[in-house]
Length: 337
Image (cartoon, rainbow, N blue to C red; front, side):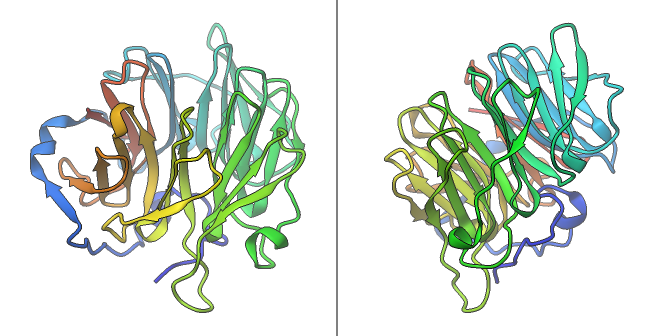
């Protein structure tokens, strides 16, 4: 049964995830134990630590998580080392690595800016809501989204922020302000957001105005539609969004239309990443799925502790040799292509 995420603190918080029931896998997904040789844990933390967000620019990657923790990789994710920062001990949920600076979002409206020389600073934002996702483009446009319909925009690379959320009733079909879980900012200044009620919205003008692209239908009357938790969009117009109940939707026309794919699982999917040649990976609660034909069919990749724990926040270095995921117990998972 679909579960409303209204009031859930963050898509990847372990306290939420460990209360999710194990999933049933349909016959359309084949399990591939041979994939174990492609999967390795390249960083481990302690039991109560977690990482929620990861991003790469070139071969440089960063991951963020509980207690203000930061990890960095300079070799395409093969190895990781902690980064010191004395700005906050609040949990950090997402990171976007830019050319000149890195932006991090987290609890209590936190936004951190990392600049050359390893210096970190917090900037003021107009909210105390959790900011669950953040993205930026090379022109200095940055957008952070999160709890109760919060959308913040910066036009100066994260130095200053303003609220730009729409009036939500016309988009959700409910009186609620939806939780927003992921955002993509492209080089044209378009902003695409996914969230609760299977919502996908877009701004073509950097957040000044918004329009509905797609909204999931609930399979049960009076039960909210499953949420979308993660989004990836390519320059070729292909994109995927994933979420609750194994929901995967795809666009092949730059977001103008979306269609639901048969994922073969009811597991919550919390990260999605496209790589070259039609390969797509989706990861989440006790699940790692791979498609090599643009989402037409999916295989379940077995290995390590995937079947008992959770990962999210997929990202790929420029080399394209692997995809990285972060998750429970301060772990970073490397999935070789």
